[in-house]
Structures are given as C-alpha cells and as structure tokens.
Length: 623
Image (tube, rainbow, N blue to C red; front, side, top):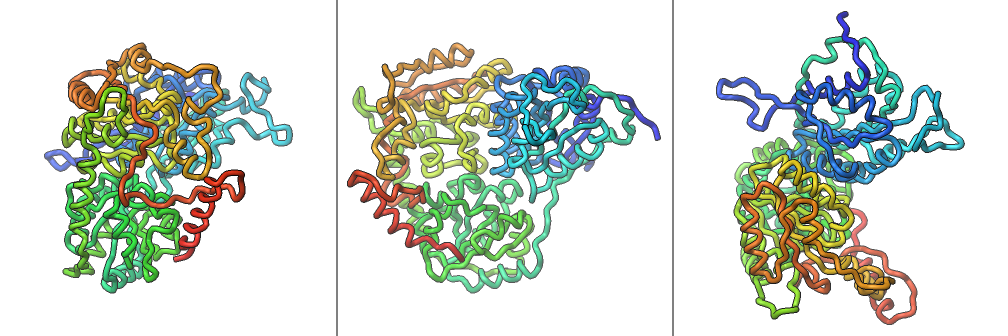
C-alpha cells in the first residue's frame, strides 16, 4: 500500500479539497459530468487550538481549497449555512475555530443548521489528547468526567459528532461527516472536535484516501403502499390542499409541484421555508399559511378535508399551533424524506423524495382534478396586499409601517431579487406580503436567530451572485451581529441592507402586550436606562466601509434601493419605522400558542388568559 506522510490537519484539508459533487447543469456539451467541490472552502478565525495545525494546513493548500477570514465564529457559520441553503443543500462550507469561546461561539449556528436541516462542517479546536499540559488555556474541566470538553456542547445540536484523538480517526470520521451532510434525511451540521496536538501529528495515510470522490444527493423512493394510500386519499377528498415546505426546494421539485397543482387542481399554501418554491404570480399559489398567513390561504386551510404536506415539519407557525386545519373531517398526508418529520401530527407518512413522490402520485392520479372555488379569494388577497403596501405619503415626523417598507422595496427591485431575513417583525411581514419570483425568498425561521441577517446575506450572495440580494434587518438584530458587513466590504460582496429602526424589539413588544403584559424592557423607551440611545446606524455602517444612507420617506427608500444596484460593495439603507404596527391586516394571520400567565394583577392579563383558554379548546392534538 502506497502512503503519504501528512499531519492530521494537512490530511483533512487535502481530503476535503477532492470531495466533489455534480454541478447544477450536471454535464457539459459533450455529455461529460461536470464536477465542483462539495465543501467550497473554510471560514476561519485562528487562535490557540487551530492556528498551528489547521492554519498551517490551510495555508499549504490555499490555492486548491480557499480560506476566508470572518469577524465572529457564529456569523462565519451563518454565512456558510446561508450558502448551503441557497445552493439547495447541494454544496456546503466549513468553519474552523480555536478552543474555548471560539468553538462555543458556533453552538448557536450549529443549532440553527440542525433545526433547518442544513449542512455545515464544523472543525472545532479541542484540548490536548495526551492531556500532558492540562489544564490548557480556555479548557473547560468537568470535575467528574475527564473526557468532557467545551465541544461537548455541540452534541445535541450536531447530526454527527466525533472527537479526533488520533490522526487515523480521519479515515472514518471524515466520510461519516460528509455522508451525514449529503444524506437528505439526516442532513445537518457535522462537528469534528479536533484535538490541537493531534492536528499537528504526522501519520502515513493511504494515498487512495485522497482520490477524488463524487457525492450524489439521493432521491429515496417512498414505499409503494404509502403512495397508493396517498393516491386513494386524494381521489376521495373534495377539498385537498398542499402545504409546501422547504423540502420542495431542497428536492429541486419546484417545477414538479407547479405541474402537480395545475394538473390536479390542488391549491398550494406556503411555509416560511417553502415560500418561493412557486412564484407568487402562479395561479395555484394562495400565499402564506398559519400564524403569519394570508386570509386566502388560511380560509382554504380551515375548509380542507385533506392536508398534504410536502417537505414540511408542520411547525406551530404553519399550523396555527394545531388550530388552523379546522375541518373536523380533515386528514393529513405528509411527504418527507425524513421519517421523523413525516410521522408528525399522526399524518399518513409518505417517506421519500418530494420530486419523485409527486411524479409517481401524479402518474397514478392521471386526469383526476379537485374542484376548489378559491380563485376570487386569491385575487382579493393580492389586491389587499398591494393596497396595504402602498406609499401613504405620511406627513413629516410620522413613521411608515413595515408593510410600506416592503412595498417600496418590492417596487424598486426586479424579478431577480431575493428577500432575506431571520427574526423580529419582518419574517412575518415578508411571508405575508412579499411577492417573490421563484427562488426569490430566503428566510431562516426554523431557529428565528437574531444576528443571522448580515452574515446570511453575504453567504446568499456568494451562492447566487447573479441575483439581487435584499437583506431586511431590524435595529435590534443589527446590534446583535453586524461585523460581517466589514467582511463583505473587504471581499467586495454586494448586497442591500434595509435597516428598519423602531428603537428596540418592536415585535416582542407587541407579543408581550398581546399576552397581557405591560410594555417592558423591549423598546428603549420602556427600559431602565439613564438616557435614550441615539444610535447613528448610517455612520456605523459607513465606518465599516459600506455605502450607507438614511431614507426619510418611502419615496427616498425606493430611490436608494434602485441606486444600490451596480455597486460592488454592500449598501445599508436606514429608515425609521413605527414599532406599533404589526405585519398583518384584516383577516390575515392566526393564533399562536404562547403561554399566558394564569394569574396576575391586571384586567388586561385576565382577558388575555381567557382568550388563551378559548383558543386552547380548538387545538387538535391528534390527527
């Protein structure tokens, strides 16, 4: 057996550099398969625990395997996650950290990737395997378990976890990590806790280990009995309804879903992750479902006698905390590549790839069509959206609503625009009101992680350089994590940030009051501070090198968004908004189960608790 002597860190980087995946086009003009790296480089902040090992290895292969420097480990991982999401899980990125806080900074991002079923490779520096210098700087010690380190925090938020305590562990650990990341059913973060001394140890690795390998994303077929039962239920239903989740997009089943809905007359409503699978202009798209749903979509959901989930977890926002699908005769079918998700809510589990499953079901249904009468509701809803998002020409000093901001951005952008966000008011408002083209929506709402937005916009733009990326972020989330704006400036990655300043956490302030509480500790005006902050976000963004402006009016915002196109660096547009206005209107939206105190000292709290009990009675806990 021919071997090559490398340090463990060198071996890891060399191996990652030759792990390939077919490109989106899959073949060239001659029919040969075109390939690209599956792990498209590594984000790195070096420190004690990875600079000597991983740092030297990455430098040695910097031409074959790129390294990118960020500002914070968590936000570097957010950028990597957004890249994988935009690539529909066909490619991924890696992140390496030092030990201690460098590693634990990534735990939040790992949880985000885990919840959203997105691939991320985490190479976290760890303590000495030999334990010779213990305790080393930043080492977390468990008084009762000598095998524990800070990296054990990753165990509950990783799909695969391994600790590399010998160089030869890479021979099994690396393939297992990528198998997890490329498995559509188990996809999520893989964490390799890499002991810092082991990174630098040499080993005679088999040359065959470094031969290029092609990773294909499987399309598992559902059991034929499950497909047959799904067909039977659709044929028997008078009012079937499709709930499109993120699995539609990850399976690249957008066109298949459109044909299925058109052919069989079944309307489609969307989750946060599934929005954009169908363009809003598609006649079978009735908009968002659930808590932040449209009047048209939620009306259909209340009547449906068969709810067909495609690639969705039926999360509480989607189901109105199990009250949305109100027809007492309704049944659930769930098509999902993960059996764990397919079984939720007692649904008929059809465990398989969304695209091939819809193709098989459609073939079996032949010319069968449902006969809904909902087109008028869809038309009325879209007209109401246009009215709600118009520029109201407010007088000086009166702040616009988030809906008006969304309307301005929508009017100022083209078909190639992608709206992205993560937390606060805007996710609900965008799901409700943004009208995307296919693929024109990128929302991290499985974990609703404040601080994802700026870094996520950078990762999204890296994945989709041909599209205009619009990052919506509130002042609260911007304050949590904005430093990757400097990275985007350094690398000349252009995107547009629309920063809505409502002077605090406006979304949670409304939720607090909706649950019977008094305004407290959310908006700056209700905080225990000596002076109200006057933060100059324009100056702050400009200090990091971004092009930054303030929009005094909605008309100013439209002009600024249009002007941002063509720049080779990020643009930040700040606009002050009204913290009191929520994203919905009319019959839009639905109940969300947020616990209300059972007793208190205010009439408002008593009324909120009475309403809470009333809604609880409508929850359907079993199918």
